[in-house]
Image (cartoon, rainbow, N blue to C red; front, top):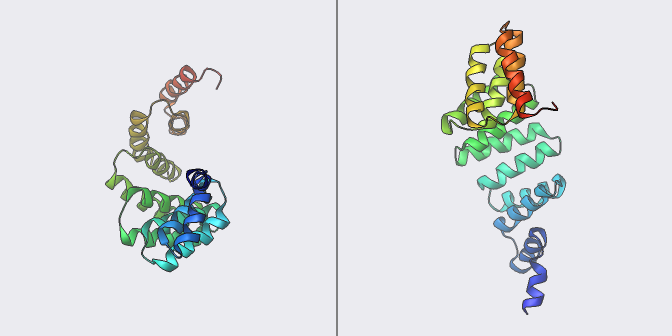
Length: 195
């Protein structure tokens, strides 16, 4: 019996496919199956499983959030926005606000994206990737001082990351602060000599 059961646990997809066969309609199992497909970078079967989870449990926050990720992966970003917003109606989390901000950025809706990044940072002030994306949008609008504040905080949190430092160097150069930019480039080269 143990040998038979172990075969069902070889991976998440196999486990939850079996769970659904045994238990019948189960929103949690569909959610887990959808996540397994997402981890395998297979958005279409993830979308099917997550839609089924939501059919069974329409306010399932995790299913909305993960369906949003699957839809973005499938290039259906506008649809993803609706699911991220639905997830936020259930619970306001920084990770969802960040994902919604990224989706809005992809759609060219920068004002809305920036509001979501700011809301995410209000919930979790030390969200490295959110700080970097907000800084990128602020810099693109010429709001250098605000962008620099967020980038400096991101670099305090994670000083080994090269791309935010490169963004800082470019922004400082464009702002005419060449000596400061040179110091940032030197730090990049110190951390990554072959850059």
